[in-house]
Length: 432
Image (cartoon, rainbow, N blue to C red):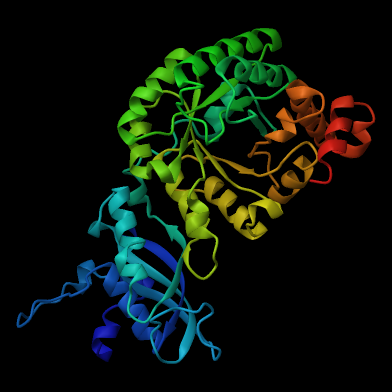
C-alpha cells in the first residue's frame, strides 16, 4: 500500500457517524509496519479492492473499516508462537480499535461473523497471530435484535427468587440413566431447595433417555416438588440438535413439562438460536461447548466475552460459561469480563443471567459470590448436588444453607456446625 492508501483506512471517532459503525478491539502480532498491517486488516475485512482499474472512484468512505486507535510495541524476540510461513520483518505486538460500518453486513449474525471473524481477519497480510478481544454495537444495530425474552428479571419472577443467586444443578450421572431414575434425582434436589434441575449439555434426545419421556417425567416431578415446597421450580431440558429440529423439540419438551430449554450455542449456531428465540415460549439457556477451541490462547482466536455478547444478542436469557478454578483453565479476569458482558447495558437488549461454572459446591459458593460482587448470577454444581454424601436433597440443601450463612454475614464453616448437609458438603468438596 502507498501512504495515501494506508491513510484511507484511518479515521478519528469524531469524523464518523457512531450509529453507523460497530467497534472491534483486536490484539495482533505483525511483521513490518504496524500502520500498514492495521490498514490491511481493515481492508481485508471490508472493501478489499476499493476501486476498479482505470475508474476514478473510491469505495472506502462508505464501506471501509477504519482504524481509530493503534498501539504497537516491538518484539525483538519475534512472534510469540512459531508460525510456519510466517511473514518476514521486524515483529510488533499491537492493539487496535477498528470501526466497521455495519451496513456492510446488516443485522444478520452469520454475515456479522463472516466480516469480523472471517477470512479477511485471519488471513490479513503480515498478521499471523490475531485475537478479537471485544465487540461493541451502537443502539441502531441492537434495535434490530430481540435479545433475551425474559432476562434476569423475568427469570427471577418465574422462580420467585429475589435477592440471591439462582441455584442450578446438573443431574448426575449425566449419561446412561433412563428417564425414571433421572427424574427421581431431580425431584430430590428440588425438595432440597434447587431452583433449576438441568440436563447435562451432553444429554439430548437419545434412545436410552428420549426427550419426550424424560420431559414428561421431569415435568411431573417438577410439579410435585412445587406442590410440596410451595415455590416454583424449573426443569431445563437440552434440545441441542440439528437446526431443523429445534422448533419441534421446543414444542415437544414444553408440551411434556419442561419450562426452560438448553441449547449448546456454538455447535447449533447463533443464527439457529435467533430463529428459535422468535418461536420460544420459555427461557433459553446457553451452554459453552466449542468456545474454548476459539478462546483459550491469548495470542489467537476470539476472547470468550465476544461470544457472550453474541449469545445475548441471539436471545439467550442465561449464559452458562467457564467459571473460576483450575479445572476450567480460564483466567479469573476473563470470567469477570464474560459476567460483565451479560450484565452491562447493551442498548435495548436485556441483561442475561451469567452462570460461571466448573466443579462448584457449597464449599465454593462464597468465593464465587465475593469475586462477582453481585447476586445476579447462577450457581451450577453437578457433583456438588448430585454427588453429595446425603444425596441430591442434601446437596441442594447445602447450597441454601451456605447462602443463608453468607447473606447473614456468618462464616460458612461456622454455619456447618448447625447443618449436617452443609457440614457434609464442606467435608466432601472443601478441597476441590
